[in-house]
Image (cartoon, rainbow, N blue to C red; front, side, top):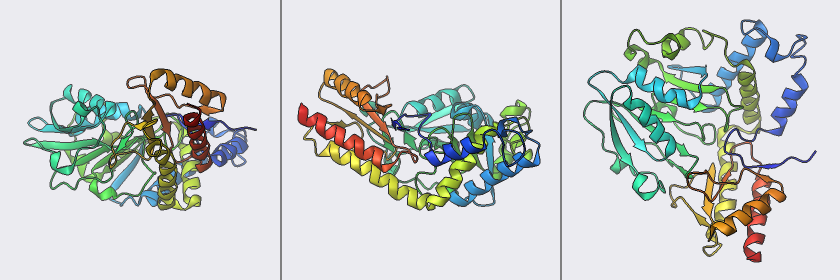
Length: 360
């Protein structure tokens, strides 16, 4: 079986070992005579999967006990609304750092709930960088500061995170969670759609500091109230059971690989393979993101002309590469090199990029 060179931005590559494990258990999960997809979410078999996924995530990310780990639905896009609905009180201001399309969408939803403030933005420079900490200017009475840790469309990523005094830091980590080590204690809430590094689409992980729960107003719609999910261990309604099962398999794979520290080393190696080709191409390839803000998850670049870009992408498709088209909003090319993308896949792209340049 020949596997594609998968650079899809999401849903994206899953580890082959995980897919094979799921395949082996698909029809009969651990002797139950049923697929995991057929099991009741109240069964002891599924409960073990649910608890293992939570436990592994806590272990891999070193999540303290004063945080809840939730498995929700609706993607990160629903979190754009849930965050201000739960934590933007009257008289307070939601602060947002704009670093790309997704942070812009998060701000748009917060505006529907209450007062907002743009604490920093790189929009005028076409989102080529991440603001410095000095550029972040909070409003009066800030409810929280929201950031997007990695920007898939523009290929930028926060190298480090600000430390705030008496202001809650909230992050959308959909596209780089589990890709590198970081201190969970800096954040009051982290959310992430699973379909980049954690598993298939349909599951959203939320890591929520328990202290925040006291701030939630009464009379929110039941499913949009974080307390509903913390009080019911993410089992108030039927959760995406198969997606959570796949998440647990991915987390087991990550642990066996050596944990997040090892994954970070591999991701840095993969990113350097591609950025070195770009930087050594004498301008034939141009990275969108500025050095210091470059993403280790999404390598975005352009060629000297649209015609060359189209030829590059057509040739790449013939060679077995998938998902290299840049986002429709900015064009060019994008290689999404999430955790499950092997080093060998990045090496194959490097060779194709070098040979294409030499040909032209």
